[in-house]
Each structure stands twice: as C-alpha cells, then as structure tokens.
Amino acid sequence: MLKKYAPWCLLALGLLVMLGAFLYGAGNALPYQDPTAELLVYQAAKAAKINAVFMLGFLVVVASGVWLWTRVRSKKRSDKSQS
Image (cartoon, rainbow, N blue to C red):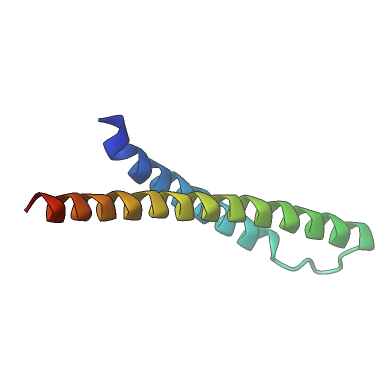
C-alpha cells in the first residue's frame, strides 16, 4: 500500500517545497530603500540558499514523476503481454 502512494506523496512534498521557496524568495527579492553593501551581500547569500532549496524541491518532483511514469509504463507493458 505504501508503494502505491509514495510517489504521489513525494510529488506533493516537492511541490510544497518549491512553492514555499518561491514565496520566501519573492519576499527576499523586495528591494530596500537605501541598502548598505552588507545588506546586499546578505540578501544575495539568502537568495542563493533559497534557490538551492527550490532546486531540491524540483529534483524531488522530477524523481517522483519519473517513478510514476516508469510504474505506469511497466503496468501497460504487463497488460499487453498478458493479452
């Protein structure tokens, strides 16, 4: 039963991570009125971390999508071989 829902749960988790990182990154991207050099460096470092989390979510989505695709493809092949 876990094998049936695991790729769907991973897909949902990856999409939630991507959405959270996107929204957090959008808040970080708001410009400051008179930023100092240190503040700009901090904002750039934070943006790099947010991009890494977004890419992690994207990789989880891709992995679960491949898992679902191979599972559906193997079912189609086994159905064709039985008939």
